Image (cartoon, rainbow, N blue to C red; front, side):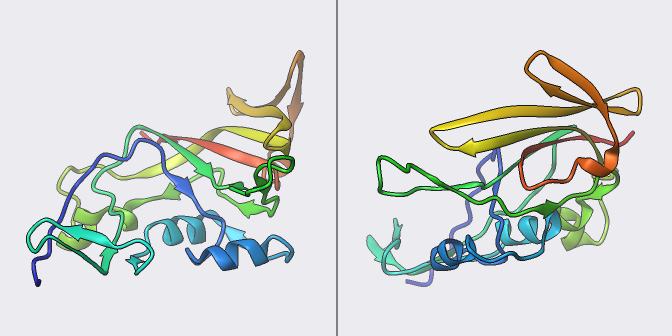
Length: 193
């Protein structure tokens, strides 16, 4: 069957992998090796074309058979507030250990996260028909310490150009150089005006 459907679905919360490949074997083996990751490599991995192989075939409604196919996420527009969740946990079969956590550091920008090159209509037409520039500044970070069954959350929040660390009832001012860490879990960006 040579029918090639295209379906658009809204994506409410992207879950970005921490690896430049969608291969689960790489995910497992990479937990033990320190590698350099950036938010850009995570986004590019998230947007990669994925092969739906014999273990995950697509059902074609035209020929009524399961077929090998490709799946790809394409961004058409982005919201004013962009929340990015880093894929820190991998499902495990062990009840005691639960999900294994990836604690590798991901370098992410505090200012000028440029998402324009990932917007599909900007790339196809070489212009942005909505006249929106998708450039973001970071205003908060949620951090996770521990494992999936037991852990602790803290937050960095920017207010009046000053960063603060919120840890339960303790709030203290922090330097922006200490924000990028291996505990970053959720990144909160706001569209620049």
